[in-house]
Length: 215
Ligand SMILES: [Zn+2]
Ligand SMILES: [Zn+2]
Ligand SMILES: [Zn+2]
Image (cartoon, rainbow, N blue to C red; front, side):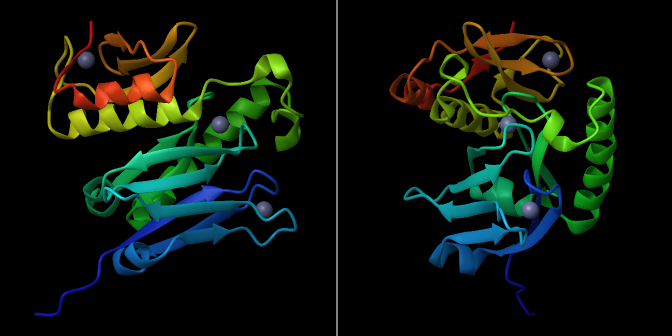
């Protein structure tokens, strides 16, 4: 029997030129080094992947919609074993990174391309830059991405172990920003849970919870 080294396809869209960048992440290569996926346009956006001290996978993904990178932490099994795993922009909810089988990724790329076209049409935008922010003003400073990052990990970790409870008990879960903070919600029954976390330190306290009840 020949053991095939674990590999994962990953894709993102360059916020500068709109090109889709596809890459391959090998498990062994990743454990040794930080990997960087780069667009070949002159603005050269890049997606970085590295392994944290506690063996989780950290990604910094250029966002097509915010023109800045968002950070994510996912566990190794989620990254290497799922057929498909999407990372979405915390501000717009749009998927910005696609991890998994090549075929599944291509399907998602096609789907999101249509989604982007619809979004642009709804803003009567002709170019991508028409819907992207110009420059961040002081009063637009977004909530700390590290908070979102940590809470996303908490949610996905509990979900993987079936320890997220909601009314329908059959949903898929995601996070969103509300005026009061980051909220976990069920896409199916709409149940939600508000994390009372305003700083990364408070968010980290949630790493110790062993169940999440959405109401
Ligand atoms: Zn580019
Ligand atoms: Zn974004
Ligand atoms: Zn539900």
